[in-house]
Structures are given as structure tokens and as C-alpha cells.
Image (cartoon, helix red, strand yellow):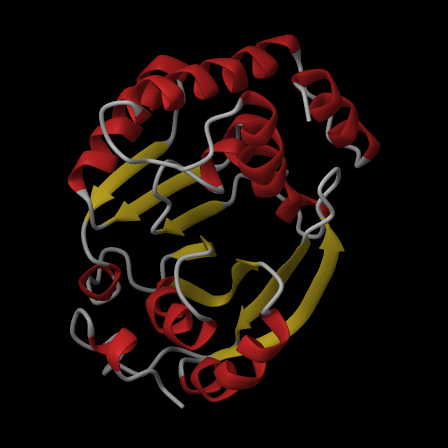
Length: 238
């Protein structure tokens, strides 16, 4: 997917990008490739692959969820900024917080945000488990997002504590979504969530399966969650 195809594909979905936004995506690509030579940010660096598998794929959440409001988003384990930075470029009014456990990724994101002149973005170096216990952040976000970070039973414990009651958690998944939903039902419920929608589609060009899981936060998360760093991964709620 080249930049022109990317722009046209989004326009088909009702998302119109300006020349300035297209320049930001181009700058994002160049910065990602440049920094990737010094540190491992992504295995995907070919231009057409980045536009499809990182930019388009990240924005696909907006085909099923309204990002046009000035929503407060927390992106957990965003790595090189996916999905929240491509969404932020497309929807400049979003207020984005990224939490990541690796400081060098935070350094990259700081540099990227300055280069792209992004406003209302903050990057926090922390483990999701300790971040979710912090009263300044716990249950403060309209929307919490994660893309390919961990299986759903683990991811729910990292993300749902951050969503405010009435807010949502979106998990962006590949082809194993159905199995993960079955295995993660107990965790979602225990953490105050309720699965409201699963949107399945094929990524253009390569036609690999994608699933967007929308989980509403229906009640507060019990205080004992999230557990200590590493625990959710070692012994998921099942």
C-alpha cells in the first residue's frame, strides 16, 4: 500500500487526510526507519508495508469507533507508537498518553512527537501493572487501547484498570481472537468489563485477518488489580 493508496483507502472509510497529515505520516516513516537502525523498534520497515501494517492497521480501529471527539486515550505498550500515533495524526483533537516499559522507546516517541509537532501527547516510562495502580491514572481514560501486546486475559488486567466506568478498552488482534475471547471472558468480567462488539475484517492487499474487540467498562476494577509486575503474564485470571 503506497501513500496514495493509503489516503484513498481511508477516504473510502470517510477519513479525509490533508496534505499536512500526509507529510506527517511520511516523516513518521522516515524517523522510524532511521531510528530502527540504532534500536529494534519494528521488523517492518519497507515503505508500503509500514503504510499497510502499521499506519492503516492502526487507524482501522476508527472504522468501528468514533475518534472525532477529544477523547482521552491511553495506549498500553505502544512500542513505536502503534496504534495511537497514527490515530492522533488522523484525529488531531485526541489526547494521547502512551505507557511503555522500555525507556529507549519513550525517547524515540518524544523525538517523534517533537518532529511531527504533536500536541496533547505524553509518554510515560512505566510497567502497566504499576501505572494502573497510580491514582493519577487509574480509571481516568475514556479509551484504553493495545495492539498485539499480550493475550486477552493478560491484556485485560493491564488495560481495564485504566478505563473510567462508562469508557472502553479496545484490543486489536490478529486471527486468534475467538480463542482469546473464550479464554479471557472470566478476566474481563472480574476486572469490570463487558465485551460489547467484535469486528472482524481482512487487511487490504495481503488479506490477513484482523479483529477489533470493544470492551465496555461497566463497573470499577477491584483494588487488587492489576497485580504485581509479571504476575498477570505468569498466572492470568482464568
